[in-house]
Length: 314
Image (cartoon, rainbow, N blue to C red):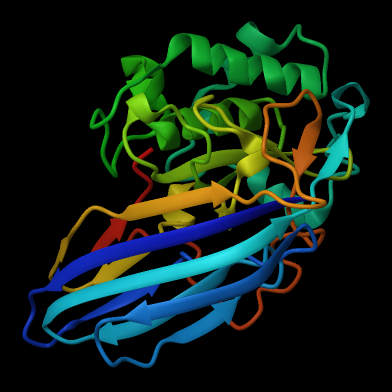
């Protein structure tokens, strides 16, 4: 079992006279494999947030209204990760006939993952690879070999096609390209958001991170398309079709955004292990699939109409 301790700080300046509304996705998700032992949320303004849980993924969304002026938020959590582990050689692609209906939405193109424009390219590059985990791993390796990680090289409009052409990006760009290539081969894939435990300090201070999850055999398995973090130390916030579904902060109004500050560490003690890079396939996803029960939060199918979303930096 892995025990992680997180401190996340966000700072904003609300500029509009009428204030601004926020939707945050920064609470640690609750699944059978990610158990939140303790958590605390502190805000500088006396607001009453509303929190709703997507029962299919365990993701939690917090909605609140802030008045004009400075707003700071600090979230602290301690949680336990008990991974489902599998031999990669046993994991198979699921044909469309047997794919769970609630997983099918993750085969379709989405705003940032234009898989319908990558069919020919994906089949030419990966069609001959052995189907299953081996082919998905091959796609991940290709993305890492052909895209260079570089901060501040993309923005909230950068798509998988843009990254394929430019050959440069940050974690969300690697992830979108990887997802689009998987979907082009009819392999369900989605983005999973969290923290970048184990990243090289040369890449900058700890930050929010975009992983990918691919549906193989009977569940969602983790992949790190950018290769910058240690998947065993992945703390889960949310999961969706692409970054538009899981922005960690979405703002409705005039807001000046400060850089996030994140500190995450793995605790040591009896019965605990430290996250390492391993050969096994890992999963911490909820067993229920997205769409089975959307819970109290029934958001719009697209969040493109919001005034401003803060997506993942790296």
